[in-house]
Image (cartoon, rainbow, N blue to C red; front, side):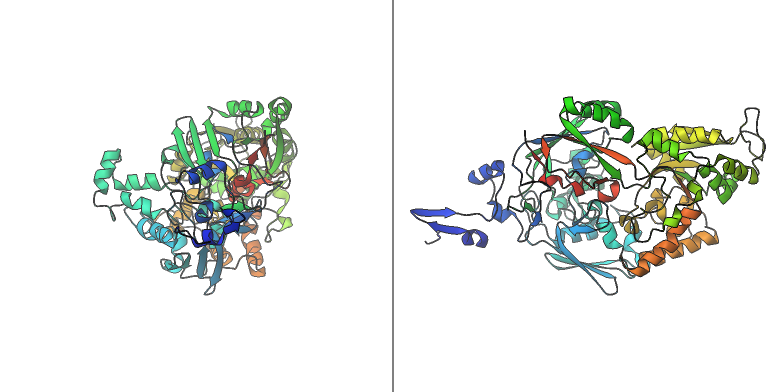
Length: 637
């Protein structure tokens, strides 16, 4: 047979001669809605839309069927679930963030004593508008955004190790290298989380974003004014941001995710399948199976639980919590769903950060006194807390990385976690808090007024308020007047920046491999994530120009961190250095933990298939949804 039309090499190879005529045989199968678009001439054939080496996903249960819409909910006005569930990066972690697999990337390799990281992209990847995704999109993010002071301000210290700026080099369209001045093996521990190797972090669609950038469009300022932005920088950021705020969910923007925005309303985001998505199943079916994702806004957590227990959603996990487990269980029959229990990756669902930089001289002296911190810790009835909030299924875990990490030492389960109110009283007396007022509360040594400790809660995700109330009750039993105060998260961060908050709370994540690349509370790198020594962090990152100079033992701690993060992941050296570093958090209690590894309910409608059921976890470290591989979910009515 003679081929008369111009076709791709892959299509030519797939041409078969059959008795009585000719027929095309595709290497890959596709959804009916896309096949119809191919027939109409609106899309190229599926073989031409996929990369040369697509990612093959083995279904959890079975090969799926195409079609349908997955229903989800979001409580936040930001409507970020529409991004989180579909988010794609160069890599993604497994369920416990203990290993990662390539995604958009095909492979990676270290050289130059862990200074040079070379990443190989899959050849033939395409954005959702059909344009090629290449290393040029990564260089655009680096050169035109991260290095542009008008857009970014200052460069992330992650890229200035050794006092020099990292060097990005595109070797070819699918191969790029990043070279640091010092060894940086923890880079892959960071990039393993989908978000940190994803859109607007490591790459941007250059062909689309250039129109919003003054370096490429002389009329960018006028375009910004026409679109209602203050300047071109605001316009650029709005179109670059991937959608953790609803206003940034841009219809028509090219994406690499499995679904792209189709409808964006105040109470609903609807996403449609990406025809160029690079995953296939083991039967050569292009993924995702489902045509659409729909995320609806609900007003509060009570309504969220009500709708979940009525069977009105297909997958609910981000806002579910252990205290609502009886509600979910009770509705399973009528709602036609099942509730499975994931384990939280957090070693504390709520952790107390005593601000050791607080300006109040009395609190500063107390918070920097180990006996005081231990006294507050052993006053906590963690067994009761576990029973009341988590049905006895949690763990009084130390405020360290997970006990499954290679550098964890089980000796860190020490007596600072034990409930011992008598010891608490002795310790609190020993630091000079012996005097009490008429109601039995301990008083300040300077003016005799009641020593009141306000615990500020900036995020209510999970049962934080319930835990806080139990803490304040336990403290009252040993004469400490503790009170819980819920405030706006942005306000709390501002108060921490300006050194006004005494005790703040959060959950303790970054407890997996991700914590080596993005340590948050465990190091002095990302100051907006360090709540117990933020002013010390400012001093470190500014080279002494800002913040408060740390004492010698904190400087030594930071030196141990620098040594730990330069050791290659998975080596005996890294394990030993990790033990030497994290023992500080177990013994010195800069953060006072409560209950971790908590049960996390996941509500799954019975019509939703290919959702993992066993050995599942939930947490930010894995980017929440990525290990659940939603691209291979399918609906069976």
